[in-house]
Length: 295
Ligand SMILES: *[C@@H]1O[C@H](CO)[C@@H](O)[C@H](O)[C@H]1NC(C)=O
Ligand SMILES: *[C@@H]1O[C@H](CO)[C@@H](O)[C@H](O)[C@H]1NC(C)=O
Ligand SMILES: *[C@@H]1O[C@H](CO)[C@@H](O)[C@H](O)[C@H]1NC(C)=O
Ligand SMILES: *[C@@H]1O[C@H](CO)[C@@H](O)[C@H](O)[C@H]1NC(C)=O
Image 1 (cartoon, rainbow, N blue to C red):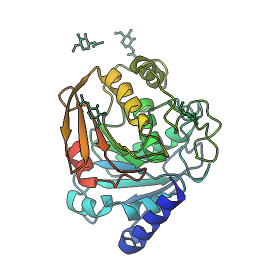
Image 2: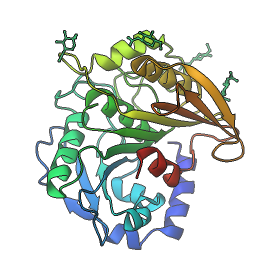
Image 3: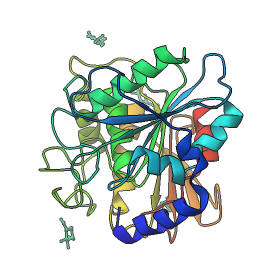
Image 4: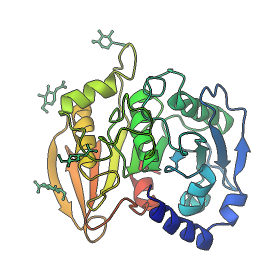
């Protein structure tokens, strides 16, 4: 995320943060943590029986606690009684690793493994419903959401994320941050066919996966010149191939003026949101996320 955008978010955090952050609980004993991640958890005052779990992934230069302050997942959790996991990546300019084979392989010993272990721990810890596990994130967090869907499709039911790239877009890049990555992907110049993207994603599950992939909803600003707009189309190509659904229709001014909802198939597996005039920081629409998740 650009510094200017981060500062804008920081200002926002000052105005709405505080109480929510105090309610986070740091957790260290969630299991194997091969890449040195950190975890804070939000548990609402009342937990549903068999609650849902949302894994919420911050942008570069961010942390879990910052992401909890600038989003409304916690206040909505008080009404919907789910658990939110806010991990932090302390490495590579606080970006998620979406480049190394370790992270781009199920059980590979990278960030995806540590995040999956957090989710598995939380399902047991909170007697959660394994059919109600979701992942969201912004920018680097959306790149990682795509990677989690590809590496641990069996753990997640749905994804809704903002301003990311297709799973594998940064494969082989020397890093995953604006400062360390091969710039081709963020520039929107790493284009592939749906089949090539799907092969890349499926290859992240060694031995092959025959089950269902999580429903995918992905948002992107048309004026994003940081993680460029063509990355929306690349994600849609990837997941439409995996779900075997094709473009069916656009719904303009949905869910708000200037946004176009891009519907694939019957709209239950894959949806894109194209935000006209919006840059890299697409405002998180937590309510739309919860609707997509079925919470
Ligand atoms: C991306 O492609 C455009 C158009 O070909 C080119 O001008 C630009 O330098 C490329 N940028 C990167 C980082 O690949
Ligand atoms: C997936 O399905 C294919 C074809 O039915 C089968 O050959 C393969 O063994 C299955 N893989 C797993 C991991 O179940
Ligand atoms: C994909 O969908 C088409 C038409 O809906 C169907 O004919 C085809 O068999 C499907 N392919 C796979 C691999 O399921
Ligand atoms: C659907 O909307 C997207 C985003 O505005 C646009 O790029 C695409 O051309 C539209 N498709 C059709 C068939 O109108």
